[in-house]
Length: 132
Image 1 (cartoon, rainbow, N blue to C red):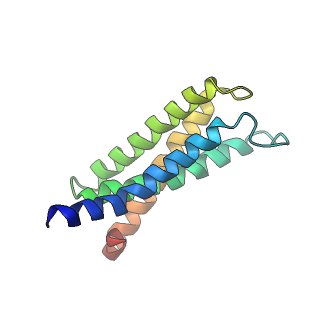
Image 2: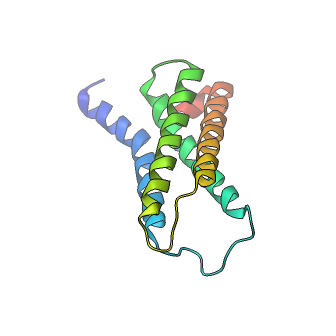
């Protein structure tokens, strides 16, 4: 593939994950994102879902690189999502009105791992998905 086509494909596969990561960073920068407190545990579900989507986008990007099998691709996407979740919690420590929470980071990591697994399992079942 010529370099220009390779760069375009890389951008199409990777840019959604990077933009979503920027969106997460923006939301984490808000001092008090919700005007009312959530019932206990609901924020963990939100973290899981938010990072589940990030796991899907990262698995898509990792899959497009074409290296490694299912487990390695899953591990790479899950590790990236978990690392970003930890860095996001660290970032929130410095935002007024926010705090860093280990359980939020755990929900982030589990959501990222689940999302990555779901995407890669779907691609394995329907290989045409990997070309999206």
